[in-house]
Length: 74
Image (tube, rainbow, N blue to C red; front, side):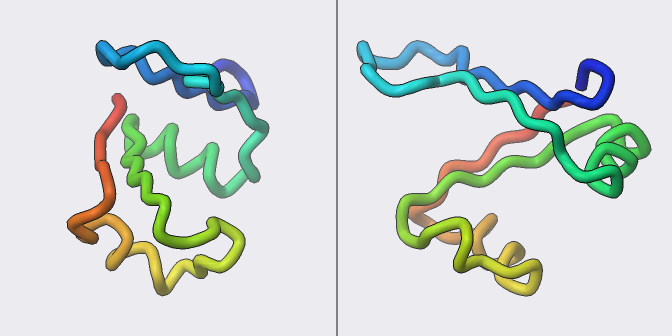
């Protein structure tokens, strides 16, 4: 977090890629507050669904899906 911006960069050794491996957004205030309170951010990535089709009730299953890659940043 830098002010109101949340930036994420994938820094693992990856094969050459043509797509972005760095993102930056202005998350909603409640997300910024939670990140500041927890001092960490959990991330799960999957290509099985479109993000706009996921609701909060779907997130626990997304984190444990065997096809998802998960990580934690602090």
